[in-house]
Image 1 (cartoon, rainbow, N blue to C red):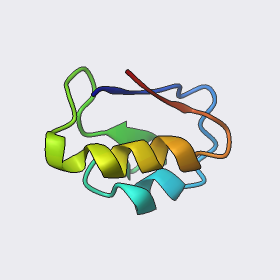
Image 2 (cartoon, one colour; image 1 turned 180 degrees about the vertical axis):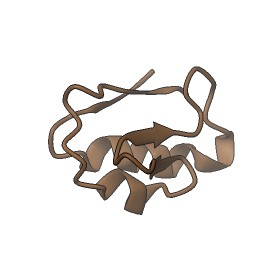
Image 3 (cartoon, one colour; image 1 turned 120 degrees about the vertical axis):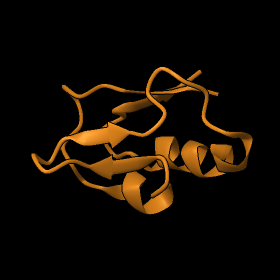
Image 4 (cartoon, rainbow, N blue to C red; image 1 turned 45 degrees about the vertical axis):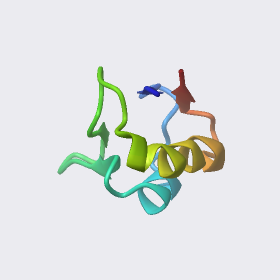
Amino acid sequence: MRVMVDHDRCEGHGLCTQAAPTVFSFDDDGELVNAFAGADVPDELTDAAREAVDVCPVAALRSE
């Protein structure tokens, strides 16, 4: 599973960082960082990553 971030849609609510803190974080400029950008999320983190996609209030996250 891969997760893509639409940075234009992201409003920085941070629900994804709460649902999947190993996958998502904010950098010093307040931009969302996907620790697995361009790579598959490890199997043990896919449930948390799916939850993060589901809880984003502005649909800034998409999974494949």
